[in-house]
Image 1 (tube, rainbow, N blue to C red):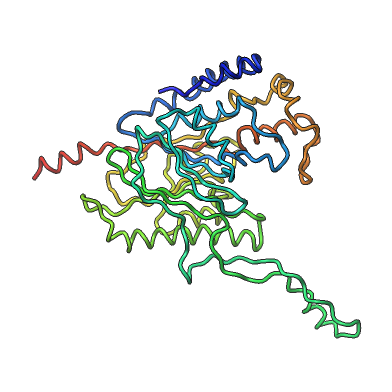
Image 2: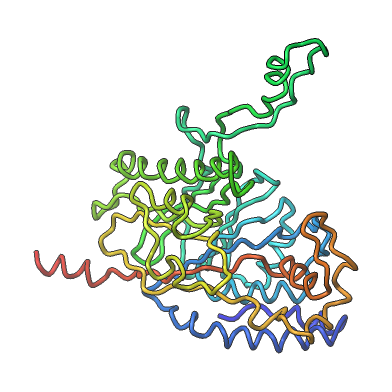
Amino acid sequence: MSNNYAGLRALAKLDPVAAKRCAERLIAIRASLELVRANKNDGTLLLATWNIRDFDSNKFGFGPRLPESFYYLAEMISAFDLVALQEINRDLSALEKLMRILGREWDYIATDTSGNDERMVFVYNTEKVWFRKVAGEIVLPEGQLVVAHKKVKPAAKLDEGAEAAKLAAATKAEFTEVKQQFARTPFLVAFQSGWFRFSLCTVHIYYGEASGMALKQRVDEIRKLVGFFAERQDKASKQEKDRAGNVENYILLGDFNVVSPKHETMEALKDKGFTIPPEIDGDTVRKKGDHYYDQMAVRVKDKRFKVLKGGMVDMYADVFRETPEDLAIYKSAMPAEDPEKKAKAKTPEALYRKWRTWQMSDHHPLWIAIRTDFADDYLSEIAKA
C-alpha cells in the first residue's frame, strides 16, 4: 500500500513549486528503491536501522525540516517493514507527522527520553509485524556497569610556598572514575514476523572523543551490551523457550559508533557470539567515505534463521543532491552562515552539504531481508514423524 500523499495537495496551495518538486522526487525515490521493495513478500522481513538526526528540535540552529523532507523520509522508511529510528526528540509532533504520511497500517513504539533528551523508536508495518507485548529499557545489573570518567573541579591551589610535588598532585586529578548505566538507554521490544520470533534492541552508543577515556567508555558500553544479552540468552532464556523449543533470538541494531571493521569497537560488537550478517559486513554495502557507525548484530539460536540480502540506501541520490541546481533551490531555506562554532562550513557548498543532513540525516539507512516463512520446515518435521 502506498503512503498517504494527500497533504501534497495542501502544500501545492501554499507552495506549488515545492509541491511539484516533491512529487517529482518522490517518483524518483520510488524508482531507486524498487530493488529494495522487490524483496518484500509474505516470507521475508525487511528490517532497517536509521539515525534520523535530531528529529526535529532545531536545537542546532539549522532550521526545521521542510514539509517536503517529511515525504522523502517517509518514502524511504516505507520501503521496509520494521525500522529502528534513533535521535527522535522529546516533542513527538514531527514523528506524528511522519506517521500520518506512512498511513494507517503503520504504528510505532517509543522510549521516554534519555541522554541528549533523545528517544529511540520502532516504526513498523502492522500488516507484516506484530508486537509481542514485551518492551523495556535495558538496565545493567550491579557489577556489570559501564566504566566512565567524569570531569571534576581541580583541587584548590596550595599556597605559593607549597612543595612542587604537592602542588602538581593537587591540580592533576581532573577526572574521576565512575560506574554507570548507558549514556542513552538501549530499548528492547519483542516482535514476530511470519514464523520468526525475536527481540530487537535498538541502541545509540556513547560517542565522546575518538581516543582516550571517551573511546574506552564507548567500547565498554558495547561490551557490556553484548555481554548482557549473551548471558540472558544462554541462561535466562532457558525459561523462555517457544513451542518448538527455541530460546529467544536477539538482534541488536542502531548507531554503535563503530570506527572501522578492524577497530576495537567492532571487535567488542562481535564478542560473545554476536555476528554481523555477511550481507552488510564491512565494506560490502558501503561506498568509499561512508562511516561504519550503524550496524546490525545477531545472536540467533533458531537454525531456520537466514539473512537473504542486505544494503544501504543512498538517501541523496534523488533528493537534496550535491548539485548547483539544488544548492540554488534551497539557499533561501539555509542559515546565512554556519551556526556551529566548531568545524564551520566556509563555503556555500560546504554549508549546503551540512544543512541537508538536518533535512534528511548524516546516516544512511542500513537494512537486511530476513527469511520468516518456516512452513516447509514445520511440515517436513510432521511428515517425517
